[in-house]
Length: 299
Image 1 (cartoon, one colour):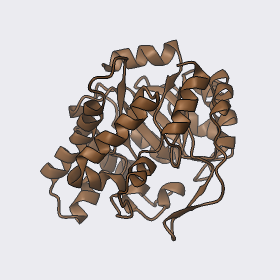
Image 2 (cartoon, rainbow, N blue to C red):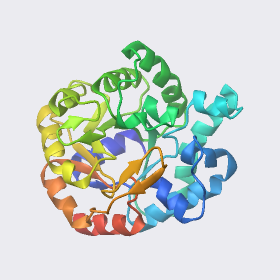
Image 3 (cartoon, rainbow, N blue to C red):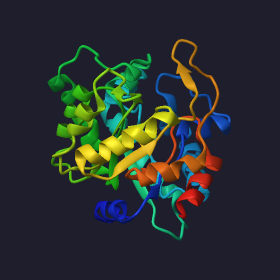
């Protein structure tokens, strides 16, 4: 597909996003305890990423979010990969998502994931933000990998799990001039970003950014979605995006999930009515739930 067709599709009706790529890979038996998380498999088992994307396409998703969330020059360098190899692996994340769509008989799109700076640190700080870096430093971190991802011609950037409005400002600047639209989604706690900023302020970062075609939340609790989506649509006048976790919580020290799942596909109609036009799931939301989302949305 193309970026233009994606933008038109978002404004014309709700699109179904995929679910958590990591839990689908783990369900297939892959160990993701490494600091590179799912990005490690770009180099070691790329066919596993294709299979995971295909499982979500077959479940009813129209948009695949790539395995590049934790793919950075800095992270790959710690594993001995130079800049050329790292760039190749980042571009391959888009190509693998396209490969997974081979043979599908309906429109499908690829969203190139760009996670926050904290994801590269692999210490849970993406759920806190406020890394002690300036906006310029965050821009310098994000822009080079976004340039590389743009070379692979994704349909859209997923600027996702952003904990902090300051980092969002750097990301919105970093996508300018790359010729790829973007959605911006925060990880939130109630009506605040994870860094503690009011969501009205955070969503406002993207209100006048032509490159940003949707704004919302992901990697948060399901019960925080509806109010956030309604606010995002009101503040920005743009379609909203919503793809929460199952409701369980990530323990960064134990590197394990705790608590009980609270995600139910029938919840998504309220999110759509509140303004969401990109709807799916994040961590611990699998193909079965995506099938339920597609059914609830009539897709």
